[in-house]
Length: 90
Image 1 (cartoon, rainbow, N blue to C red):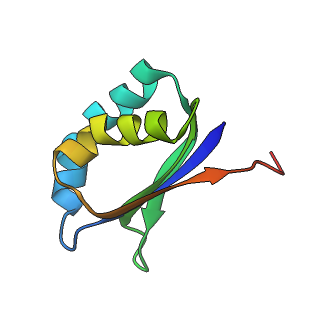
Image 2: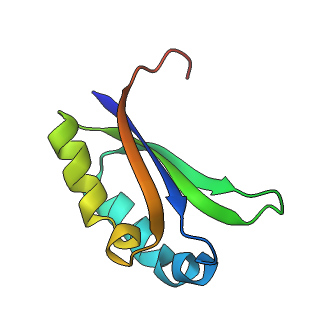
């Protein structure tokens, strides 16, 4: 089942994001459950959050993935929401 993770960065946390980006991308590759992902951008085109589509068994697995994300461990996010998602196109 697909889950959409939407995370917003804390204000002024771009350097935290950049410092943990390699570990975050490695985590995505290692876990093998990310169907799609990419950063959210602010009005200036700077990264300010994340959208990650997870292909996992249930909400608990999505929550567990989110907790293990190096971005989350670094305290990057101001808010995170995870919802079941139905792919219609793509």
